[in-house]
Length: 458
Image (cartoon, rainbow, N blue to C red):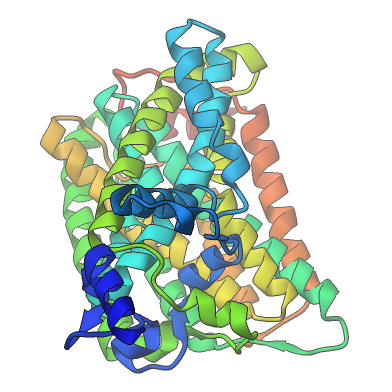
């Protein structure tokens, strides 16, 4: 019987053999840290469901059986699989010339399960590559949706859309996701004092303050001049230099997170029986994982292009500003899976996981995606700087400071979450009533100096 099992494994999944004997790939066997997993992986796993391979196992053809098993795990192995039909629906709506606002919303809905599946696939690849390479892969692909949308927007010279969408991702993580997590966790655990490890929150808060400084300086630099035109080029050079500094800081942060102080960023999850054990085993192969990752990236790129092309039409059709759609709607729908996972773990009084998701995503966007977009725009010949304008930068500063104050004592209750949520609602209302003309030939919006002078003279 043992020899028959070995022969089957050798034919179907040769990478699961060790010294000629079957082995089980688990996180524990890979790096000997027990069941420690990153907060992002723990959050994503909350939306997965166990697949039943009874029917698939009866298929005689080995290649077909492997393909169907992978299809079942990747497409049907998530509670968000109901949203996958939105992908072909968006493509059909685009080529059939249906309403462009429909293409926009269908593309957003299609991006939701794709973002969650990318997280799942990178975790599966980490079973074979080890935790360090897996962590680097997750850090690179963790916000692939935002990055691809930003690149397509840059190719269309829609710099304002890039800035709005990235700012919205940071704000939604710091205020909406973290606020909802603290609120729901506090209400669900009224009789329990909720505590979390402050050390991870302190590191992420410092990184976010550095990102805020790099975005604030180009704004102040332009504001301090007699005329904004005199500082346009120097501000651009300052932004590019600051972006390089931010990328270097993020690289050091990855070393800090994945090597020297890994224990601060690992989420310990108590065992929950056989289901938890099943989650610790690889369910797709190494090369299958890369193939699925490439395929998912292609569809993310396609839908991202649709989103960028139709966002202004959706704005006109719905009577909502582009800034509101980019800052509020895009981040909420695009990262719904990750956000839902963070809130679920807050209900279970596992705030370290919720904080790891919210703060980790905000740090990754602020310190990696934003400066990378500036560098990519530089390569493409697009003049994108780190000046997000006064209203946007002020909102970001207040969000970071509010979050830092909220997390300073290592304890939580529902009132803290409520305050963060109310801050998000007020900022959302501000961009709801704002009407900004998106001029692709202009790097910035209305000059701050003239606006300030108008206010002072009124």
